[in-house]
Image (tube, rainbow, N blue to C red; front, side):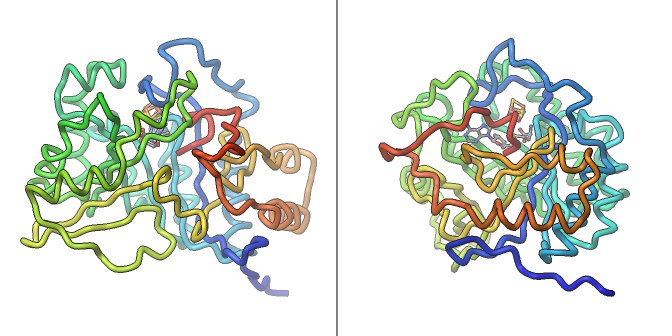
Length: 331
Ligand code: SAM
Ligand code: SF4
């Protein structure tokens, strides 16, 4: 009998159609807002889902819940061996397939990712100044990342989005430089408000450069107008009045978008999270490895997402930081 998809709805009527998959918790960078300088233990290899296991969960989400988008992330997804093999398997599901990466491997790897079926890419870079970049990431590799951006453009991955975590006292003086960079390269710069997901737990509200500050600063140099309704996308968008492209801001802290969230996350060790900030997880790895049927997994995911909360409540007294940090969850 053919399988009929039924939307994955939660208790607030939000329909989920987007799956974020972390393919590894490992990373070749150590960004200060994400990981500690040293000492975050990697997951044991046996705990990390195989590509077949990941593809099975993704297929269930597409077949049973009509998911239409998958994004691969990490850790640094491109350092997992044979990533194009996974991309090929997922691309056969016929959904929009995107990747978030720090860009370091793209000079050698972008073409293979595209050949395997990758359609969109987000590259992260928080400073265009080599010394500052090295301080933030704890790696002196800005040149490699910039070359990786060019490699992605050459491989035909357009439009590229450039993720910039905007932090007070760190890179607030580069907002306009980033805007210029995006306009020149034809890429969409997306500023992300700093979220309390750093492994060291040093986040404070004062370090958050807000959406309002970011837009005011850029608008003073390049006039902007808002782009209409963002739907389920996390970024609010503005376009340059002179036709120079657009920018976005992901304002998870000051303009939370939980009411339109359509995302669920799968961690590298096979835990389903209904929110980036969730304090509970569904252990799909145990189900996968103990002979659970597609029906069993479908029912478990439906129950987990059914229990999704209204929102993360950063800055409220009820807010509890998740036990895992960004690189361990998958941003
Ligand atoms: N390693 C890849 C990368 O950096 O693009 C993918 C994983 S990384 C966790 C995904 C995104 O999360 C990156 O754009 C990164 O800048 C962002 N990120 C990490 N920690 C963050 C934090 N505490 N607040 C806001 N964004 C953060
Ligand atoms: Fe690695 Fe990405 Fe985290 Fe930086 S933000 S440490 S590149 S996972």
